[in-house]
Image (cartoon, rainbow, N blue to C red; front, side, top):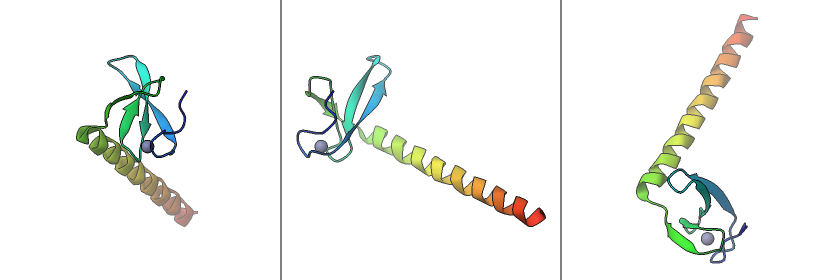
Amino acid sequence: MPLFCKQCNGRRTPVFQKEENTSHWLCETCKNYTNENDEILREQTQEERDDIKKQSVDFDNSLTFTEEKLHRRKGVN
Ligand SMILES: [Zn+2]
């Protein structure tokens, strides 16, 4: 498995592709996907970038929410 990008030497993460039923490796620096043979398949689409951004925003929001909840509970006790 190509864990590191051959272009920038950055670390890749496997991203599951529903359509192909396999994981492709995404380099977050180069924004491209490669297969297991280290061949570049395609670039990450703008849609996918927005999706990831949205997910991380949701994650931040849920963290803030949990912290608020904990804080309130402390106040009651
Ligand atoms: Zn790269």
